[in-house]
Length: 570
Image 1: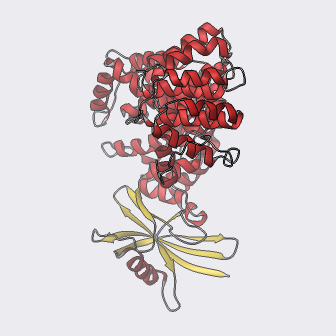
Image 2: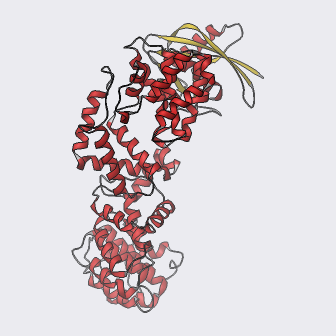
C-alpha cells in the first residue's frame, strides 16, 4: 500500500518547526507537520489544508525541497516536502502532543520518525547555508565519529561548534562550506591522541579524499589549519579567520556547561579519582584555563563569550559556591545514569516515590532504587580511599537523599574495626532525616555484634534525642535485639525511653514495629511485658494495627485481655 503525504518544513530565522505525535503506533515520535494528499489535491493544496487543520495556521509555500520514499512495515510512504514560512504568528496544536522550534544544534535532540529523519542533512544545509551534498557527507560520515569520544566531546558538541560558527560567520565574509567543514572536523584527532588531537585533526582532514569533491587543495589546507589552531592551550593566534571562528565557537562559555564538561572529562579520563580529587582537578583546570590570567584567549569580538567569561571567573573566585555546583553536577553525572527511566519520565510515579520517602524540605531525591544504591555502596566500601570519601560526605551539607543512603550502606559494608565503624556511624546518624535512610541502614547492619553495639543503641534511644536518632536506636533493637537472650532487655530499653503520648510519629511507629515483631518471635513474653508496662495509648494502638496487618500475628491476641480501641486511622 502506498500513502502519499505532504510535509511542511516551516522555517523561522535559524529554526524549523517540529511536532510530536500524540496518537497511534508512533505516539511520542517527532515529525514535520502535514498529512495525506486527498484525491484531486496537489501536494501544495493538501499541505495548506493540513496545516490549517492541525495547527490553525496559515503558511506560504516557498519552494519544493525533496521527495522522500520510505518503506514502513505496513505501507510505503511517499512524502512531498516543502520549505514554508508562517503567515501570521499564531499556532495551535489540534492533534499533536507537543511542538518545538529547533535550530541546527538541536535537530537531533528529538526522536524523529524514520522518514522525517532522512531529511535532516538537507535541513542542516538550509539552516547553515551550505551545499546539500556536503551536509549529507558531514552529517552521515564525519559527525557520527564523535560518538566514540569522551562524554564532553560527543556529537552534540560537534554540532554546537558548527552552530556557533555559523552564527559568528554573519559578521565576516567567509565561505560557509569551508567553515562548516572546519567546525565539524575540528576534534576528529581525539580518535588518535588527546594531547595532540588538534594536530591529528589536521592530518585527518588532509588525508580525507572525499573532501576534494567540494574543496580545492588550498581550501582543504585552510580547513586543516583551522582545526589545528582551535585548541585554547596552544597560546598562538589562529592563522585565518576560519581558525579564529572555530576556536571561539569551541569555547562555549556558559558557566554551567563549562563546569559540567570539565567534570565529564575528569570522570571519563580519571575514573579512579575520589570526588574530592575530582573537585581538586576541576578547580585546578578551571583556574588554569578560565581564571584571571588563564591561558584562554578570545578571538572574535562579536562573540557572546566575553561577558560569560567574566561571569565564570567570578564563580571560580567563590570556591565555596563553586563546590556546591560541582557536587550537584558530579552526582548528576555519576548517579544520574543509574536512575530508572520510569522515575525520569513518569511524573505520577516520581511524585509518589518522593512522597513515600518524606525527606526533609529542600532535600534532593535523585530516584535511585535500593539495588543500585547497594551496588554503589559496595563498590565504594572496597576502595582504598573509602575513608576520604566518607570524610567528603561528612563535610558536604547538601547531600542528596540517595547519597546519604549510599553513605550509610558504605558504613555497613566496609571492612574496619568496631571502634572505627561506631565512630563513623555516630557522625552519620545526625544526617539521617527520614525513615527510608534510617531503616535501610539499620536493617543492613550485618556487622553488628549485640554487646559491642549496645552502647550506641542506648545513646540513640535516650530521651531528648532527635526523632530519627531515636528511630535508629529503635530499628537496631528490632533488627538485632529480639532473640531469646535479648528480648527482655529490649523491653526494658523501651521502658527506659520514657515515652509519652504524642511522641514524634516515626518514633511511635518504630516502637510499635518492634513490639509487633516481638509478638511474632515470643508472644508470651511480649504479652506479659505489655500487661505490666505503661506505654502510651497511641503507641499501643499502632502496635495492635501492625500486629493485625501481619499474616504471622493477625490471629494472635496482641494484648492478653487489655482492650485498646483501634480507630479507622492513626
